[in-house]
Amino acid sequence: MYNVGGVLLILGHAPLLLKRDPSTFFVAIAFLSFAVGFASWAGPQLRKVWESSLGKLLLPLLHGLVLLLSIIWARFLVAEALGLPPQDFDMTVGIWTLVLYVPVWVFVIAILTFLFYVIAMVSILILEIVNLILDLALPLYLKTLTCRFRSDNVYQIPRIRFLTMPWEQQDF
Image (tube, rainbow, N blue to C red; front, top):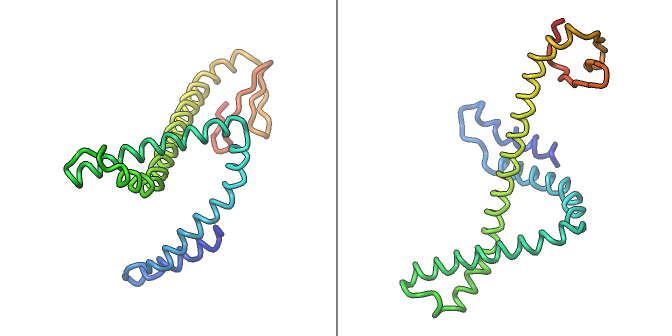
């Protein structure tokens, strides 16, 4: 599905080469095929998480959080639209809760994805700082020790292994 999405995305943006607007039909189908490809890849992995004991605990808690946020949003909308307290319109609040359940799920998933992204970026930053410190401190330390540089980009020091990235230059 990723390949189909890539081809359709290229076809959708081909009119840009002719100084025209991109074809929204091809772009929409491309994004849809990317989404289907991602869902087919992530689905089995999510199912494994859901079947674990942690997943069985987190999923109802997440549903409860989404339902609570949907009720809050629905009560706010009913109060704003009617100018009256929402306690008097339980049926309307219930219907709006059901209508808003899916958008709140999308919002919660977006928040969780953003948090995952931030955690990943912070961990990459920490790893880069550690790598920089090791790159600055390791040559000074290696001058005092006997060290070999192997072809698989691993410095071997007695009882310590420092991994390096293959694209980094080693100056010794």
